[in-house]
Image (cartoon, rainbow, N blue to C red):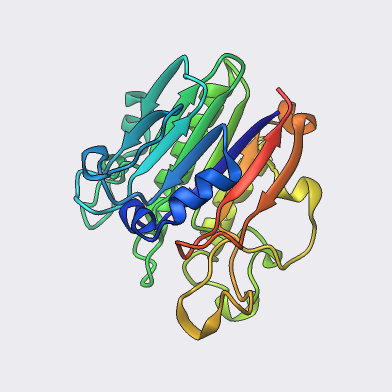
Length: 266
């Protein structure tokens, strides 16, 4: 049984300084852990992970974005960002000339029987200035990336997708309709993953609301579980029966997000 975790750490150096990353690794002992919003390059981080292979994709802009994969199993291959084909097709630069293709947002690890992809999806911003990038460029580019991989092997992708898919995925849907993370465009982007056959792993086991992965720092939101589910594991349809458990871990502190995990019998 493989244990795979995903966690937006909101700054790997901060979560290490708090001692929470070490607690997390010691408690859960993941076979593969995917991180988002690392906000650091490997040479800026003092971390000792014996038994893990480490792969980092850092943004060109210092202290921003970034992803990492730590794995007990050595991948067959690892690639960063999107293929040239996908980049040329989808043009990932927004109207403010911010190039989401240089922000360290995607890592793909190929294993013997499957791929693991981690993603830190661009935030739409409070002013919704990145919604066009998400809707017309990023989300279709990421879907094509995963579908291209799936032609070779099944795919499990995870990360902070920066969207609550349905009204069950946030505590207060009505006042948030049309706001970042819950626009029609972003929700459609997620819906397209599902239409393409990718399965939202948590929903295999749990229905309804109350399952959240991110909470604002304001108003005691986390203690009251007034949150959003924006962190996910999705798997190829052919792997659905192999997923034996899908969980969120709100008890794990250190970030405004909590880890999400799956256990897969492969």
